[in-house]
Length: 121
Image (cartoon, rainbow, N blue to C red; front, side, top):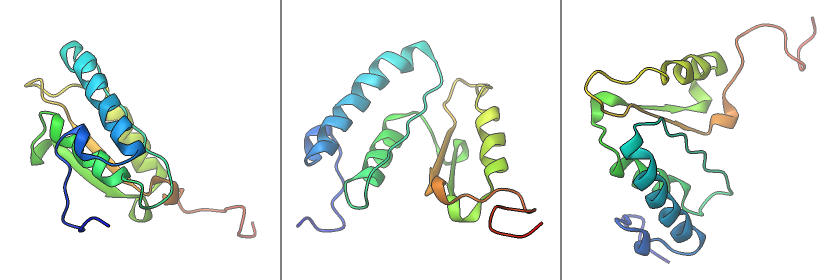
């Protein structure tokens, strides 16, 4: 078992399927970054397979600083806020830097308040 402080810096540092995904991320970035096209990456899978470290690796390869990075947790945000953020990604930053929005546990994001399938009315 690896220590929790282990942080992969290259695709070779990843273990198992995460290593293949890290190589794919490198290929994606090599083709997409020069074009300036928006990038969207969705990582799905059971806990403990390296999704967070892959996301950290992806973030480290982009030219983002803390002013261009937003990190949200799906348990604390509504779907409408996620939709607004996604719509805002169509606009590039003035200085050509990428904006990064990382949403963890997006499957737990709530809809706006109002009647739901679980509540009457």
